[in-house]
Amino acid sequence: MKGKRILAALIAAALTGGVTYAYVAPIRENNTVVRWQLQTSTTQTEEVNTEVGMIYGMNTQDKPVEIYTRMEVTGQSEDAQWAAEQMNTDWSRSNLNAYDRNGNRVEGWGFDGDGKAVLHLHERYDAHGNCVSQTGLSVGDTFTEYTYDEKGRITSMTQTTINAQTGDVEYQSTTTQTYTDRPDGSYTMQQSDGSILSEIIQEYDAAGNLTEQHVTWGEDGQTIETYYTYDDQNRATGQDRYINGQLEDRAVIEYDVDGLISRAITYDSTGAVIGTSESREVDGPQLGEDET
Image (cartoon, rainbow, N blue to C red; front, side, top):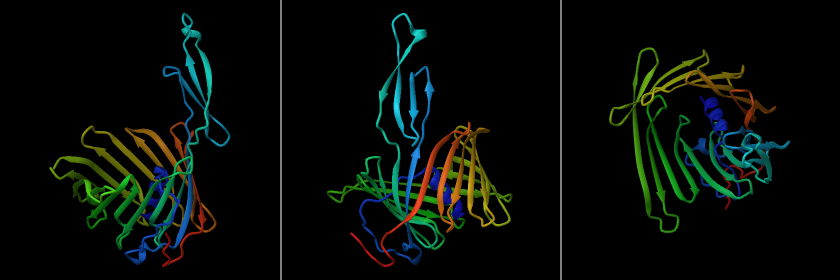
């Protein structure tokens, strides 16, 4: 299960990284920082769309450097010209994440392409490894708290936004969901009013790793099938995701000699790379050390 959480986080490339240390004392031993990891990610886009009239070119660092704009010439629309516009946009971003001894991310900072911090997160976990609270420090303070059932499934999520200047609560919302289990291991997820959100079927291997998940959404009937792979050490190595029977994307995870995730690559349905995420160990506060 931990491997699946790590894989999902890498594929999503959640923006969490570092600029200043504002370490918060852990509330449990399993929330204590034991290692720090610097992660950089790049989303690659290469598109030719004659209707929209744009071509995005990539350089060897997989950064967009040129945009070609279709220029319609009066009376010569079939022989439209292309004009190049130089671009210096850098889609890469860097993240500094702190992990506890169970591999859960407990704190992180995110930078945009210019090195500006855009997000600061604190995350706390219960004894089962479930994230029970997440605090995002960006525009104001946003607190998200979760509750779970005995199977580790989210039953409620409460989001609260605090005005950073006045300390007043600007927004608060709670959503709840319940589950109906069946003998075959499948289950239904319902909203608080009883309406069906989705039907979920999951399959596991002999080691208890989730290998397949089939989700059918109640509102529009969309199906999402996800298949997970693991190595002989039960570490997540890949994920294939299908939407309505068609391959949507595929992800592959690589590990370093110490067994830590070093890189994750995401491919689209044609096999083209659409995202990369690389990590390496960095120095950070030691156990029990607070920094500001």
